[in-house]
Image (cartoon, rainbow, N blue to C red; front, side, top):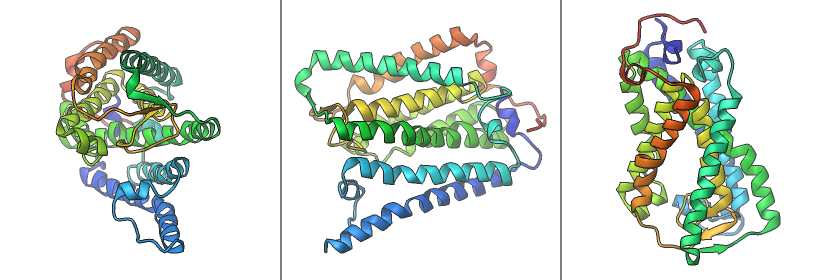
Length: 310
């Protein structure tokens, strides 16, 4: 019933296009503080205005950069709420889950499960090739990162989930009246949003298999579980653990993490492994814990033409 909660006669697809433009505009508005301080710093120091994203990221120390960049997601999330409430006349809960209320136990289970797997995976890599990492731990900056990251990174990841697995998932369901089209479209768009990440530039387009595959995994668990809770927990754990545990000179953010990765980036089995092995294992764990059934219907079936009150 999760997708059906957005199926209403007045929920035409053009409203989702309009809503998406509004959310993007809200995100751009949230970037004004960053642009403002970049202008001020460049002007006050007599330097040229930076012309690349990499130059902007290096203008300030990393905790300040993290704070300034994440402000845009706060504005975007506010934009999502406005669009859902006043353009579609739905509640935020209706694009979160089909349950009477958000199931926080699901969010925390997914969060801690992926945190555990991430820590185990890193430990294996570190023990097998310790020369590729250097301890870069600095107590005070790290503690600031923990506070900022624990607040802002879940807002960032939740915003992305509400856009892709919530808002657009229901939007494409309104358009196609089936389940496979929203699943495929949101996965491809989600992956494509990472196209200009430094990781893709360094390792090549094969990395898109990971990004699109991750979007597909998040879409599958959302449809099978009739809600975004598992996706919210997974995504928050993935980004937060990554920011706190290890950074490198070629990732989007350079943070005051515990370790710094010194290895030269290359696309190998580590790109394919999560998609073909780890994600299926997670699907198995979730399916057993939450008794998922009727996979074919939930992932590819048609949506009944019913109106659900929100």
